Image 1: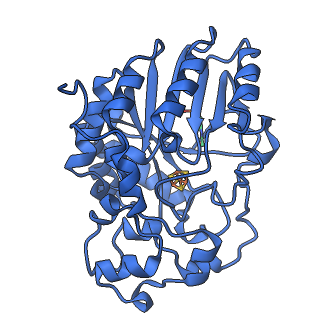
Image 2: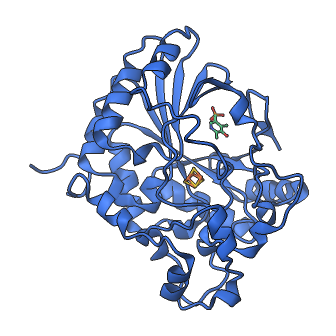
Length: 334
Ligand SMILES: *Cc1c(COP(=O)(O)O)cnc(C)c1O
Ligand code: SF4
């Protein structure tokens, strides 16, 4: 059968690709022709949060470039070990707003489900890098408690599948979960927050596209791309396939020092993202998580960047510069 959506890939090919991922920073550095001393590599940093980089993402890094913007997002470095009391293990206070384990009730009208602790890539700045996923596992009773709780919330109009990465679930698991959520009357929209179509585009297979297209409620997919170099032809094809399912595609990024903290980088990111049919949505100021202080960009610089971006791009290509704070139901605009 000729696929309606995606390039013809076998349903679970992406899992094979994931097994080939770099799980050791030193082998990634060898692949890139870089000496560990030249890039601040730290084995101790990798112990606290494991290194994980899928091959398709690594292929977009330039060899022999120690400050490559993709490499800096994923390489365990000594700077992560510098202790700074302002950076905590739970920067958004998420362990204290669980309606049932794994279901966060923080945003008005929206419930956020941390579907799985697994990701296809480990981003060093991740605000959930210390999150106790095994303590808050919503899948342990086959999602029953979560579905029951959401069904009882008459004001819940949207469910956000987050993680980890919800697309780490199998197609069968996703189908069951999404269909069960879509069957809840008051839930009008479904949302997925995912980095998989970017870091492992083979994840966007036929089965996934068929299941998204079959859902009876509108779907928004919020991707996570921080730099234009993350987008190649495979990512663009994955985005086209996702759009054909009828889903809206948005992008969120994190403002990261030495990675995308220049107006040229941010403008290129917006342009490239839009060329793939994705609208820029949020540019997050860094959540102050322990181990990520060296990625932080100060507010004054962020404000300047926002103005420069406005001066350069149409309004719909300027993402909202926001900060997320604990105990607040909405983002704080910069
Ligand atoms: C802000 C935020 C949300 C909710 O997103 P909105 O688009 O503001 O509804 C969900 N998850 C995380 C991690 C967020 O920071
Ligand atoms: S993919 Fe998302 S959840 Fe996973 S490590 Fe990166 S930022 Fe964190």
